[in-house]
Image (cartoon, rainbow over all chains, first blue to last red; front, side, top):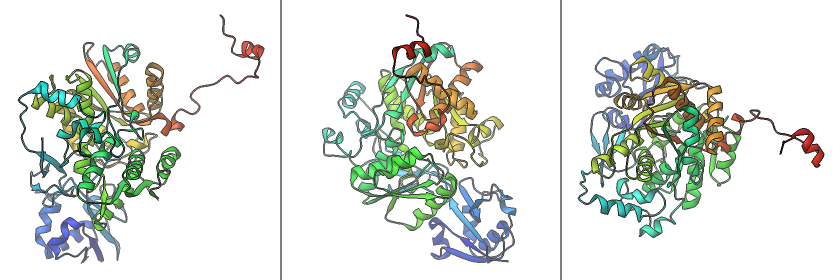
Amino acid sequence: MAVTVKLPTQLRASVGGASTVPVAGATVGEALDAVYAEHPDLRERICDEDGELRRFVNIYVGGEDIRYLDGLATAVGEGGEVQILPAVAGG
Amino acid sequence: MSAESLKCRECAEPYPLDARYVCERCFGPLEVAYAPKVIDDVAAERRKIQAGPQNIWRYADFLPLEAPPGPSLRASSRFGLPAGCTPLIKADRLAERLGLGEVWVKNDAANPTHSFKDRVVSVASARARELGFEVLACASTGNLANAVAAQAAALGLESYVFIPADLEEQKILATGVYGTNLVKVRGNYDDVNRLCTELSGEKEGWAFVNVNMRPYYAEGSKTIAYEVAEQLGWETPDRVVAPVASGSLFTKIAKGFGEWLDLGLATGEIPTMNGAQAAGCSPVATAFAAGHDVCKPVKPDTIAKSLAIGNPADGPYAVELARATSGAIDAVTDDEIKAGIRLLAETTGIFTETAGGVTTATLAKLADRGDIGSDERVVLVITGEGLKTLDAVRGTFEAYEIEPSYDAFEARVGVAV
């Protein structure tokens, strides 16, 4: 499954400045593993020691936070987009 | 206190004082760090504050700006849209109704655009100008939209304001009138926030007050604590009840008290901190009750739209603070919120929006539960104005309608002399 991972500005230096990384994967977890395989230093910035998402990292599929879906096991369709953004808030 | 750097709250990595909000190493939120300061002459420092302008710039020494706006304190009174110095009112009838000893209401509806957001926007926009930005922007549940649009108009800056499309009409009208670029996003606040987070990475010339300017913005909330302490005669209250949306206001109020206690400007202790959420959007109260600090995001469904943040970034810190001060985070239903609005209005003459209904209802709940000692001095933080959420009071009372005659009045209303 070909998917696109969209990176926030804070992570782009690690991939040579690109805003997106094309990878293969059927779930968010697989897509991220494919990104880590090419850019290993991204792993520790997105995940904690237990492999869970850091609490200030938000990941969206189809505009929906994966914490509402199936977390890292959330399915991504062919041509789908996985968006990584830092958590911020304040009404 | 002069601002020294931005610092990651999670891993302590330092960054320069520019427009950034997230740690590049661990994605933790950045906060302003100040150079250590010792006040030798507390009385002189207090007099200096008292001689300052009647707005938040009297506390400019404790805010992350290179220079207070304007060449002098007098000029600070005339800069932009001055916020702060709102009334702290002793609410004896409210206290009596709830069986409490001493309750004060900090009425932050008495700000230029009728909510506490004028404080945070004042600091963020002043810093944005220092950094050379000419466009202000924000993601808002309404009150921030009002404040950013108005402050941009006052400063002559262009602005872009992003809101959920289904926001209360009053908040939409009270934003558009200032001539901002108003963008109604088809989604909830968390959708708006996601869009603005993405946009702030691409629009380098824009100061998103609550995204890339967030560290400075958040510091503005400390001024509520400074004011309360000053208004209570340089003492901290025993307990504070304040609303929790993202958790930023709640945690920064405690930070403000903590700074002044450390400096010796205020006496007392960090108050017991009670957070208030709506049951229809209570990820922080849920995490508190469950005994962990990870706030599982929720889809908001509440009349308290200004508190409807389903994925609160400062939630974990709000939970930690409530625990550390022997406080709590509670949630109240929409019916309790409406009753809270009425209770505050009937006993104090203050008409608050739904968020204030949440806070007042939470105070009532704490009183009912017996959590508050009879000797405690409690401050209720009212963050916004009732005229912005009129739907919450529609149909909650009846009026007499009569012909314009004495007899009609006597027949219908019939007040015995």
